[in-house]
Image (cartoon, rainbow, N blue to C red; front, side, top):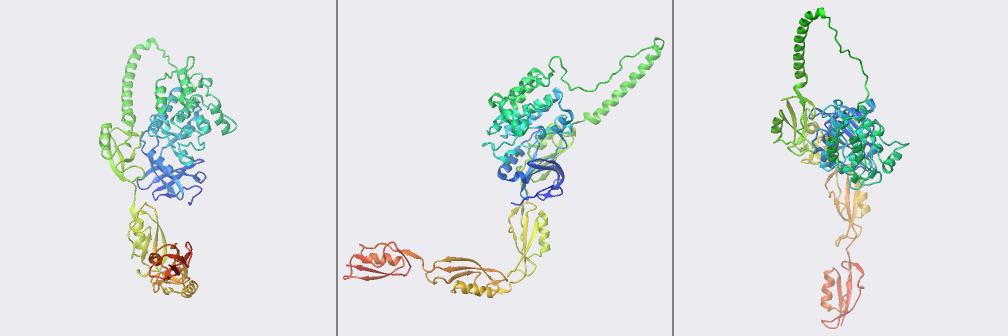
Amino acid sequence: MTTTTGDLTGARVDGRYRLERLIARGGMADVYEARDERLDRTVAVKIITNAAVAGFDVKAFANEAKTIARLSHPNVVAVFDQGVHEGLPYVVMEYVPGTTLRDLLNRRRRLRLEEAVELCGQVLDGLQAAHDAGLVHRDIKPENILLKNGGRGDRVKVVDFGLAEAVHGDRDTGGPLVATAAYVAPELVNGKPATTASDVYSTAILLYELLTGEVPFDGPDSGAVARRHVDEDVPSPQVKAPDVPDGLAELVTAAAARRPGARPVDAGAFLRRLQAIDVRPAKGSTGKVPRPTRVVQTTMVVDPPKAKRSWKALSTLGLIALLLVGVAAAGWWIGIGRYTATPSLLDQTRESVAAYAEAEGFEVELVDGYSESVPVGGIVSQDPGVGDRIRRGATITVVISQGPERYQVPNLAGMSEDQARGELAKFDADVKVEREYSADYAANEVTRTDPPAGEEVKAGTPVTLYVSDGFPPLTVPDVVGQTEGAAASKLQTEGLEVGEVSRSYSDTIDAGLVISQTPAGQEPAGPGDTVDLVVSDGPEPVEVPDVVGMDIGDATDKLEELGFTVKTAQIWFTGTVFDQSLDAGTEHPKGSEIWLWAR
């Protein structure tokens, strides 16, 4: 396997994804903002690093990508494609402009109660879609929560499903611990498999941090932190944030129970309990993160002698206010009111998407595209993306899958090199040229390709062009019947080399002599070409059967059928064999002479 190291900015992956900017770097993978040059859209390409590729299960990774690609949920980052680039597996995902939840927490430390509950609810909503599809995330943390356009509305997106499992082992056997220590479930620390309840635990720790501004456990290193999840109960968030209401605090500690069976069974169960909680601040607190305040004067002093004049002024002000309200309403409609969030069309098909979009109040424009993971007729992507701001009744461009993009290698034999390159450029083949002698094609004509003509390949696949150097200048000598040494000497004298030498039994060619050759004698060849030889080991040895006690005629027939030459000594024309010259069980070449004595 060939691997690439360092920043790959500028590289072209799979002949279509141009890596434009490195936007994230981690221990397992690097993420690039990239341009899909076929569909002319911005995507995110995550490429596994050299450090993580050792022991990487490419098949598991591909299966995970296909499963994730089938997820259609506004709170899950969509997966479009996957493959291997110069030995490094990659996955192509929806590009989410904005920031991560970690960045937001670094700026604000903690969120207001209603913000924390709303954000956590969206995370759980996305997780439930994954749990329903049989996926377990294993690594819920602020770094894996993306906030599109600042996190307002349906803008929370969960990323990185399945990546840890593809690198470090399947979910059935657990594999080594790869989750982040601050959020890891106790059962993972103990080497047990990840389940939906493991994601519930990590999300509970995430909610704890949103409410308090810190995680419940710290320590001198990640190992020590992980052990605290096993040995200690997660404390109530009210210890750090007294404004957290009782019901919410109790749900956090229940979802973060050390025993998986004591937690909500999956993200959906956690979400239903979260939505049923009264999130008003605990008694005696506001539940809001302190913010700077300012004094606003609200008292108007009226001079009685000027009251009549003031009435006229107030009327004028009222008209102005109505006008301003009208202008504001018009501005709201133009700038905000006529817009809404783009619905998800990703779970529709070519047959259903137009009707579904019309029911949602939108038009659709269908565009054909290719996908390694979305079945034919399924939805590859949409523009605007799920949850993006869109004018009501506007048109959504939908890319319909035509299945994997494949091209047939054309038959280029007889073309010039330039003509052949032009044909291969139609699917961006990576062309390499090799030259060889040919008895069938003139100099500078293509003789063949590798992969051969007719084979289906992906765009950007390496293709070797074999170009003729003209008719071979040499003729292969006939060395059949010569000794191996004499044959080698004759071939070398003619400018040829001995290739593979194999051995075979022969009833007609003596041991040590050449039985056959490839190419055959008088065939054309080029300088340095190899000739394979088959050398005789003589007749095939045969095991002598025991014929003592048999009728002399029957014994003779049996031995002759095996290839022996039989001699007999007997008194009568019939008789029973009482001795044989070659011992039974020994091996002798076909044609060997054997005497039988009968009486």
